[in-house]
Image 1 (cartoon, one colour):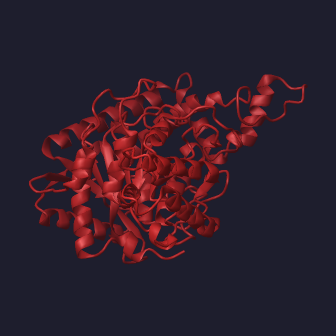
Image 2 (image 1 turned 135 degrees about the vertical axis):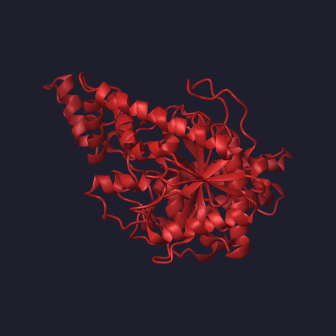
Image 3 (image 1 turned 60 degrees about the vertical axis):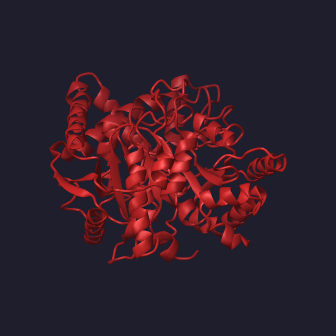
Length: 499
């Protein structure tokens, strides 16, 4: 097969061809490295490409096969890893100057599980600094372009991972989702992204932004590929105190047997209205009709507390970020500025943070520190946590009536790079539909549901399931995906512009 044919294959197809001897893992890896060489100067999906490490992993897979050892379901498949997961011997910057050049001495649990499954890690992808953003414009190393239109954002904070998929630089990727940073990039790039139940995937070795919200998860170009990756990285981890000690939901089985017949699907009235692009609403309404045609019962839901989710999130997340980022003090690792022997430790810390943190990180640290300060804690952070409880209760009531909830993933399609750079509130509204799920800890997926007629850009359908019922996402997602492929063709594979 030619390189151009190899890079268009899905992860499950690649793994099958490697296991069957039709392709070698080295051939597959080299094809994707060549693709990165050809297009990433324009896309800027990667911050670091680990060429030697990837080829070494690929050779190890081929040697296993030559010895007759059984290969796992994703053995030899290349993957793009968000630069928020520590990787032994490979730079991990979190998109920030304050960690520029830092090489971790250990692997995150997600990284370790990928290696144990013989997944080939191509390198680390670009992201908003410390995962704070909705566009990947806040990276200290420059923005990533959306392969559908390089003048537009690929979503955030995991725009590098989603762009790598859409540009065929990798068939799989890993992202993290604090307020929508897996689902929102998936929506605007025409890919699939899943936020597992909070605690379903270990956070050990994942650089913390907001500890009660952060969740790593799989990104792919199909529902089945996402399920296969989900199964590899999920599961209890004693190194993470928030890890759920329960079996991994049967996500692969659900993805292989997708159906919505007899399911109750909820539509929340708060997830539409002012600020929603007409083409996004049109494609969402068509998706609801599609679900009805596939045998689902549609139930209208009212979740009034969802209107408060954005306000609560932007108090809780900055407060936790203020606490987590206190560790970047120039004393232990990373950047150090002003240490000339004449300044105090406090001065060195202040100078280092001034030089190392970007504007958005500083904005959130200051907001969070203020919200946690004496005299304001109860009025701001405490009140936000009460709203969080109301949102969780609204979800609980909703899931008494329905099996899953659907909504648009984002209110608009990908916006031009720079359009919202000076308007933080407009930027924050990109996560309007995704934030409630993070506050409640539920599972959610975004998958393509067509192109907006006014601009020809991808629209995402969000599916939300109760905690630890992640398999419902894949069951519904696979049914929707199959129906779209049958009726209109896969929007990414059929219509994405060529680089």
